[in-house]
Length: 557
Image 1 (cartoon, rainbow, N blue to C red):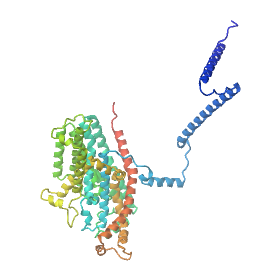
Image 2: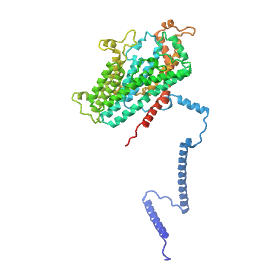
Image 3: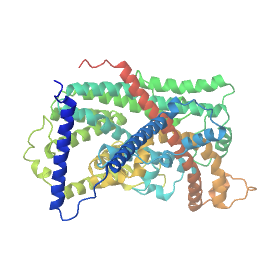
Image 4: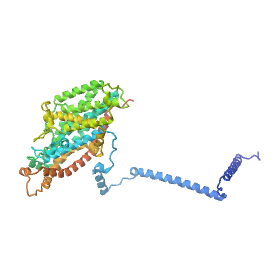
């Protein structure tokens, strides 16, 4: 069929007809509009406009492809580019950057919105600061006297390390038992087993590896003569100043020097297993006397884990009664440190019990509160805040009131309890620390104080601060002390510092000397603690988790 049109011709006619009809429709719309239609383009103008549109789209695609290529090249530059040998300036600049304190390198961590355990981190940081304050302020005091301000309740705690150590143990008992108790009350026994297994494996690594690392640093410094000058100053001034801790001894050979480190390591292991070594044997500590509390922490942690597992199937009332009996037995058998752990566990159970009655998301095993508790649970939020604030103030007053180290005149509270309890100091410190922790864990107003970024930073570096400050005091602290005393008393170098000279130094002059020393020694302590926290403490936590993953059986589900 020669005269029949082809498919292409039909398609062309259809397109032409469609275009003509569309043109008529556009002309109709333009006629209906209040403004004139755009000018008609000639075929050459339309072709030029089409070419420009295609060129613009092509350029946009090329630009997008160029940007993507540039983005990929920037991201993979360090991976694929050949490594160049860094110069001396870049290496030193990077080293200087890493030596800066963490708060000068990057923005601080996000601040928690609520108190509770997060606020207890801040309290732990302040307690570590109190330990450092006491260990350094006694360097500017006599052995048989004390500045009057260190006997004032509330103020005294800032320079009272023993009360701070009691706070450590109560905080540890509260924090270690809070999550397991929450799982017990929710009857999540499989998750409880995973939690306790994880805590048992990681606890020893978390506590002991930083101790061994810090004592190794002290061992190296001693072998290099870093404590030789401080040892001479200690021998000269220890007769009339309260220099409590001697510097580590410098042994004649490197092998004997590291043998002392092995003695410290052996003490830590023996003090943990088989639970029969006497912790008061101070000759074990050649590099850091403060590590005596670490085996205590581990012992009490394992005992707490055992009680949590053993009482996990008990009803709440019977579990709390069991913990109360264990606490009373430990306290009356001179095992007060373990009693503090179980005191923390007891108040954690009380908090969870109260939350199960008051929160909207009750636990599985929660019940309607008894009738005699309903009036207490229906109190206003302001009333609760005042209650927790009073609990905190009462505990704070008790923990800063012991008679220990108060030779001239002690506070009235220990004397009032002498006829009632056998050891008034231990009684006051124990129950005062429990009340203090309980108030901080529940008060929202106090939580704002203990969640301040500066206080939380102390909580982050708390363990490092506890381990580092002794080495700095026994080296730089002893070296800097004679200079601060001369500056505060305007004593020339020609006058020898002796006991007769010290008897003429006033409390104001000793305080000024202490402040001058604190500025220098405290700066070094916090800087060293920050470095130890970032490069030892945090990696140890990650290492402990890695060991746990390697040792644990994979979940079949």
